[in-house]
Image (tube, rainbow, N blue to C red; front, side, top):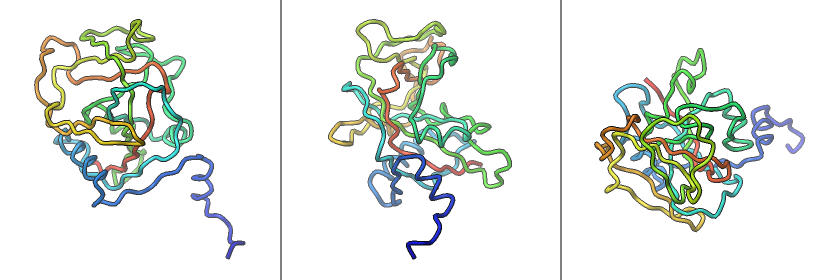
Length: 222
């Protein structure tokens, strides 16, 4: 039995050098994630969570507090690379808020079904990540600034505050590896930033070791 050849999928999984544990639908973690998903789910796009895996081996980030579980969507072609090495700031990346790693507190903000779903996938199944992000001291902006490469001195992250955000009154806090992590659970509401150029908030870090992939979600799209 020990001489049986390793299945190709198992071989590829071992090459990732990461451990993924499947959560059961009845697990508290699964239920909290599902509520996070459902609270801001749009009428189009994402339909339901099929499976959730917990990441168990990823690089430690800086000892920065104020941690939040946030969404990150990406091209399916780079999911394996992300699982192996974590999220990376690409040398030539850039956009409305400069060269960073971008996260969202609203799942639809992280959606791009053209990237999330493989071409030719008749079942419309895609992958998303939930990440523990160490935000530390936040700097708020409400206007685009493509020149950004780091937070201002004395700050650990930049938050592009949107005109809407999940209601913070419904946030919950769970303990992961001995650290408290905030998870939004409320429906989106209008914020005080009514003149912001951002409709939904964007959470931005400029150091790769300020985030850790905590969960990988397999999602059914419409």
